[in-house]
Amino acid sequence: MTTRRLYYDDSFQRDFSAEIVGCEPAPVGGDTGRTAPAWGVLLDATSFYPTSGGQPHDLGCITDGNGDAQVLDVIDEGETILHIIDRPLCQGRVEGHVNWARRFDHMQQHTGQHLLSAVFQERFGLPTVSFHVGAEICTIDLRGPEPREDVLEGTERAANLVIFEDRAVNVRYGTAEEFAERGVRKEVQRAGILRAIEIEGIDLQPCGGTHVKRTGQIGTVLVRRCTKMRQDWRVEFACGGRGARLARRGFALLRQAADALQSAPDDLAAAAQRAVNERDAHFKNARELLQRLAAVEAARAMGAAQSNGNGLRIVSQVLRDVPVEFLGAYAGELAKHEKAVALLAHGESGQMFFASHPAAGKDMNALLKKVLEQNGGKGGGTAESARGKLAEPGKAQEAIDEALRLVVG
Image 1: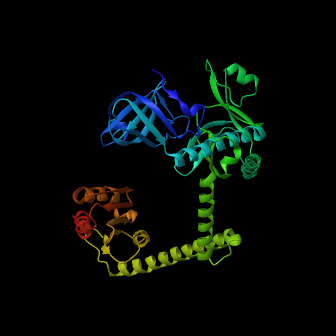
Image 2 (image 1 turned 120 degrees about the vertical axis):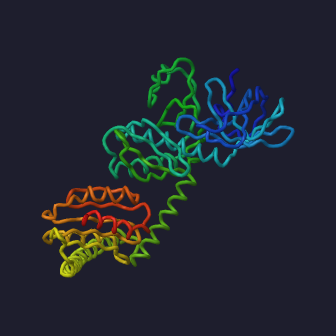
Image 3 (image 1 turned 90 degrees about the vertical axis):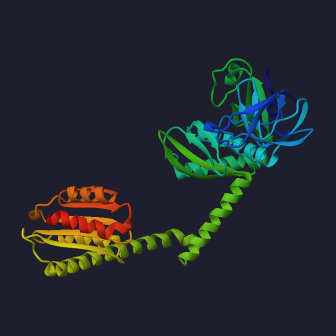
């Protein structure tokens, strides 16, 4: 049996009548992502679009004598379309109702993609290799050189001009050879009669998706940014209501950021750069002060440290209420002193820093690994410096005591 695809001829048909061909329990769990019971229904005809070609499936309901069954998924199985619903249906005639808001949004995005792809290819020689409609953002993957900002802006402007001209969007049928003669954007190697979408005067492309009837129904196109995606370039865009929502949200974020930096929105970039420069300067100053403090504290600690029988001077401490970064600097300064060994832990986080002067003759990496084996955690380093983290910060003092015992022993 072949399912008659009503959306092929009329993407605006949101309600339809059909005969049930079959209804069986659908798989759950595994790759399906479904945990609740579901059923798979085959109809002799449908207006529900299945996930295909970068466009997500429709939602809605199918109604029988017992009420509405919610459509959870629509799957293209070649000749047939399988509808995944939340309850079984009675055999016989049913009514289908497509979620129109979702369908029309997808129609706007998909037609907008055709338009953008046509402009990218015709004006800038950038062919589309894939397309995806996301929950908020749509993407086109382009092949070729990186689209500069002026290319993105020029494509958006040209596409919106075609939208404002309200050109016709028509469904055409023909063979691959016939479409090739008419200047199809991307040739396909399939036999038989193909369905194509034609945007008057600008694009002709084989496609099985749902589309608006005139470019004005796209509303508007907003091209956002371009990022590298393996060998291609991924362009983000949104059409219609999506574009308006994203523009509004973007302006709200711009205004919030400008208010936080006490700047006018137009001066935000300069204000943000000043804030970054000030942050970097403060970070550099703080790091220098931290290093100076670590040197002072290390000198004081070494002055109070007693040498053991091997001439080692060991400083073992659990520090609290200090930045973790201080421990690293402190351990490094301690290790500058002759035959010094630093065994430090951060009480709140469980971070551990072991360091030693080369003349101390102690392997800090081996020491840390032994301590972590006994107390739990991960870390590593070199013979002169090692860093780790305890699985339980509460064991910091116990771990330092163990380290001290191993060094002295």
